[in-house]
Length: 319
Image (cartoon, rainbow, N blue to C red; front, side, top):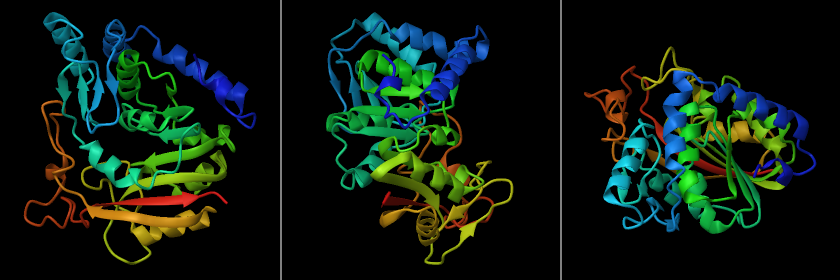
């Protein structure tokens, strides 16, 4: 089942399908880079779960007694093929996937500000392995589309959902730049951890605005710098060792961007400093993480000497 027929008539159906088919041909090539993640996905498809619970901090897919010990070992081996795991936690047939990000903390901050999504069409831009998409399912959305251009994350979600079998969740190899193909489509759109990677953030927010239906809601979460000024940091090569970071705004600056893009009812409902309690190295993500990005002599600065990041959460509406 595809998601195309569930989109409003305003969507550019033919062009969306053309790009989808083009990217499917690309990702289905018999090349090592694709097979590395396609093969574990295909292996996990033979383990459909009976017990699925997306209402807890760790998304539960399958009970520990549903499969044998040998099968459990096979599932864990295939899950580890998707390393590094960035978002989580998950519990898959009793296997605890301890991801780099304690993503349940972010969900706990935003869920009380979540609009009614029952029967609604939702987009999660840069959805990664779909942790937040799974967390939406208890609220009964009609359709959730994850935009995710990374082959690793794409197949990781497909592997998880081949077991969880949540029919209203879909993923496509699309990026935020494809939002102009979805005018007036979404009731709710999540844009989390994306905006500071865009070289033209206001243009991106205008595309987000256009993709929402009238009265639609944006949930935006972003890296930010502390302070009350209406400014944004434009780092050199990296910010907290991350390349591809363009503008890191204050919360007030980000609200101004949203207003310039046309949004109303703009509410910054949470701002907090980052820490290793939320983002850290684990057995499922063995590379550098937050503590490696911060000046060991001054936790208020990144290794480059910039202000250490906070995270901000904003809810805004299309008029």
